[in-house]
Length: 223
Image 1 (spheres, rainbow, N blue to C red):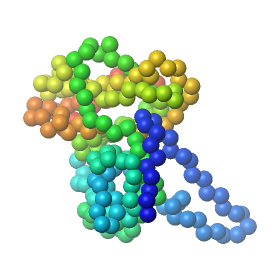
Image 2 (image 1 turned 135 degrees about the vertical axis):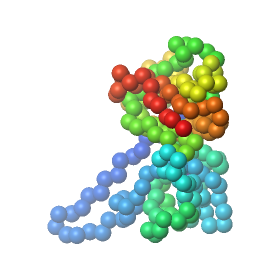
Image 3 (image 1 turned 60 degrees about the vertical axis):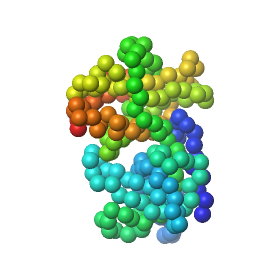
């Protein structure tokens, strides 16, 4: 079947799923609402069976190829997406068949470079939920102010530190002069492979302007 990717870039709002059961009798609830995973994965394209994705666990865990039976539209090969799915079996193989319940576009970008001073970079605040690395990707779950307009949301490396063992990176968030109205969920994934493969590189200091943990200036990711 054809599954459309619900894209509302650069923001992603995940709908809450509520299952109501009767107190008087036992009712079967569709597994699509009870047994599933949410993971940020990479879309690898399609083969004769359906869309193929790559799952990476935390840190440097081995990758797992996810074979689905759906066709995904409006998404490019290599793009990161939020996948709601379940495994078809309990194996621990490097390639597994899955049943897909939903596929949503998120902010999917690569690390950029900036020669501008840090203070000149836009840094509208976020409300951080989680920040983690999977392979060559830095993943972010946060809340941002909704504007209904185009914004800039990027991960940028300070050019002045690229040759050192510790590289400073900044979350650039620009509302483009538009006033936010309310907070909503946002997921992003940034490919930092070009930096991670540098021989001189050892550590990333990721600077975030965050309202949840305002005293934390940066987060460390070590190779």
